[in-house]
Length: 421
Image 1: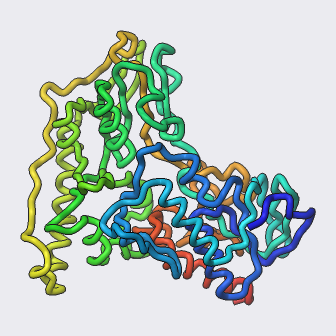
Image 2 (image 1 turned 60 degrees about the vertical axis):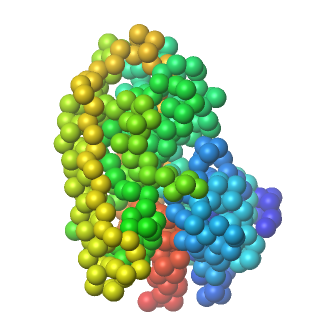
Image 3 (image 1 turned 180 degrees about the vertical axis):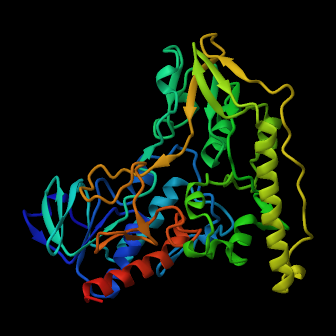
């Protein structure tokens, strides 16, 4: 792998891959297998977002045995464990070396625009003409904007998951965590354990147990075929792509971290943050309905697992069916917080992430900043592709193990495009 200075003005390549995370490196592997010359441009280092944009204690949600990339899989001593961020970086770096990916680090792409025969890519170290571009720069480049950030009193410090590294970075005192997906519940638990009083604002969420019938819940997702459901088989694809990540955490104890577990730790639950007026945070009163919907969806998914186990003859190798109690609503349901009272000293906005296409000078991004694509094939811009976005081609698309099938099929399409088919 070479540094950014290797690029000269107006270089030519058949394909350019933007991003050297697991998605871009998987694309590179399949491009190499097809003998398609290409370069992989990375603004930082290999696996840059895993290095620079994650908090210190984060572990993968997926068990190690499920960590795999094309021709590369976990070979360590703890297949049922969950990788730390350092281990994820090592895993992806190893794949880059084994696959001999032509990565150029320190290459910040500032523009991609169409030409008569393909695309013109401008970087901080020169320009490249190519026939095809694969956007693999990630779905989590920026935190979603804080919905009421400007209305928060100045006495309350605000953080995003990109700012957060650990509890020590926050001021002493109470913390409001907004958002109850995987990020929100993990940060709420860590902050509560640090001795800070934590309030968690809960909107739509996906509840899952860490284990079910003696197996990791993701074993069920993987083996039952739920994760392999294709994007063109999903009734409401737009909604599926916007679902928050499930309430899971990777720990050696395979702990379930749902809202009941947080309540038992002492975390206070409030509804969705609806407004901030005159220094007061106002919360939705529909918390019971939100809980009931998440519980119902979890129950239906577990019933799907049970039906698969019966049909596939797996009942004998797993435990008995389990049922979990409903999410307990707080009594009373708190509807507002005075942010100027000193009770809350910091807010962590765990409200999701979004990709950054500010450098993409091709009219393929909608008003909400979403790329217009069909299974990773960008609409109305031949030769432009994407990888690593939610439910790109399958429900597992954003997970490390889910990229292989997507990358293979996207590169197949790219090869047909180059061949004029």
